[in-house]
Length: 106
Image 1 (tube, rainbow, N blue to C red):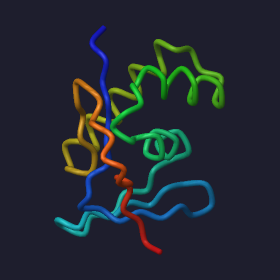
Image 2: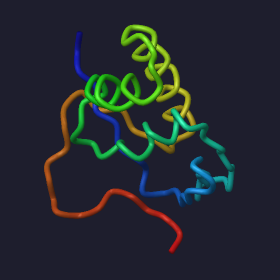
Image 3: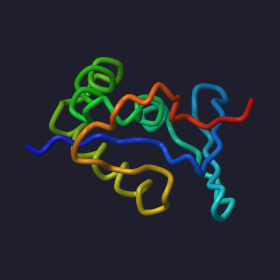
């Protein structure tokens, strides 16, 4: 399996409300309401953590789901967010520049 790394777009604003992430695209002002699993993926999307680690270490542990099912569902989810330009999927980790890739409302 080729590893995937995901990173949040810098052209979004996000806020955690009652355990679920609300994401707004700065490109077209579209709002996305992520469920709890989507929120875990969003918060872990640092461009350095492999998707397999996010799924195995966070999603499977917290939500008690089979790894193969969770990974497949996570791939579908990130493809959907990537199609809206709010996540980017990479085939290798980003270099650590010391900056925080998350953009959120204060």
